[in-house]
Structure formats: C-alpha cells, structure tokens
Length: 300
Image (cartoon, rainbow, N blue to C red; front, top):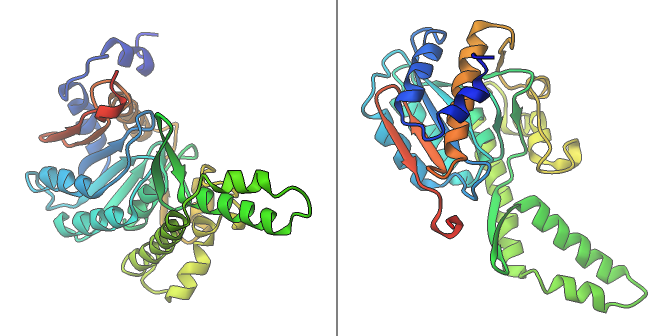
C-alpha cells in the first residue's frame, strides 16, 4: 500500500529533519495549542538518558514559543534518575503554563517513566508502555558493552550470595560467579535504586499527585518501584490501564482516531532515525533539532 508508513520510512532511509517537520505540525493540530517537542533515545544503540540530554533539550526549548504550553513526546529505554529530574524541572520551567503533557506512543521506560510522572497528564494508547523506574547501567563485559537493569544486577548478586551461604555442597561454583560482581558497585546500584524511588515520589508530590502524602504516593506507585509487586522483571511493561490504576493522570489515545495516526506517523519516523547509523538521540520541534551521533565504541 502506498500509504504504509513502514514502507515510507525505508524509502526515506537517510532522513533529514524536514521529513519529520510536517509530522510534528500535524500532531500539534491535536494538542490544543501546545507546542510539541520530541525526545527520543535509541533502543538499538547502547545509550541512556543523562545530564547532557537536559542541555540538549534546553537548546531547543529556549528558541521556541511555549506560551500555550509544552507537550513532550518521549520514547526511551531510560537511564539516569537525576537526569530525569533535571528534565522534568526544565520542562516545567520553560512551559508557559508551568506544566507539560507527556505523549507515549511506544515505550518510555525507567528514567523515561519518571519524566512522564512529572507531566500533568500522560497520553497513552493501549499499546503504549511505561516501566519500573530503577536505573539502567551500561557495563563492559569482555569486549562487549551491555545495558543492565540496576535491580537485576542487585537481585542477581543477592541470590547468588544467599545460595552460597545456604549451600551444603560445593561452594566453588558460587564463588566463581560472585567474582563477576564488585560489592562496591552493588552498593552503588542500591543507592541509585533508592534515589530513583525518592525522585519519582518527589516529582509526583509536586505535580499530578500533589494532594497525596509521600507514603500514599509510594503505595500507589509500588508497581513502578518494586518488581515483586507484579512486574517481576525490569523489562516488563506497565500499560495504560495499570498506570491509571497507580493513580497517574492518563488520557487514552484511541488507536482508530486521526489524532493517533498522526502521532504514530511521527513516532515511527523518529524512532527509525535514532535507531539508524545517523543518530542515537534526537530532540526536535518544528523549528529546532538537536541530535547525538551513535557512540564511538559502537561504530564499525
């Protein structure tokens, strides 16, 4: 079919910003006057949300008209909780209404979920995904760079240590596996997990859950904080209905609506761009664009 978006994207492999500008303009028509900015980080390249992204975002926000408010379309596997907090504060500060909307057409995981929590409302389709908010860790194993959940690293270490203590057989296999961990790193990861939890609760207290106490907020969003509450794995998604059940302010995007079709068009175009050889991150409006190249260690 001539209007198949996937085929169009492959035909526009070497995308320039102009190929996405029209899509951004179309989405803005459905946002009640708010200005749309996209913030995408790659799921294919090993990158994470970090403090530099806040500077990248500001370089776009300070040059556009946000007098009627900001809508941030976000797609990312996550990263640093402190960077997410900075991005939340930046979006609120630059928006002429003092708040922003988060649009999640695909996946906003980990620190990206924290950024969504900082919004006054989150726009999600039934196919959209949030996720647990523990940080992502990029580590080098041998000659390969890999991305891990901090929770998974800590829980793996704790399980191995517990099994080693309780074993009545050969201890050597456990000791060999434990050598892959540095207890200083594990303690650091524990601190990062606690920090992400504190940031998420603080952000919600200053925004969409302002009427609740911090203990009430923690209980409400326990699905995001503790995998034992239902997600089990960091990689498991939290869908629109579950997010609403946690008390988040969520607006449903009807996948049969024109509004969704324009959002999906922009989502696929931008996701394809940051997963290509041309970029790993992108912040973009109709007038401004800032991209980050693929990390040097991943280039062939």
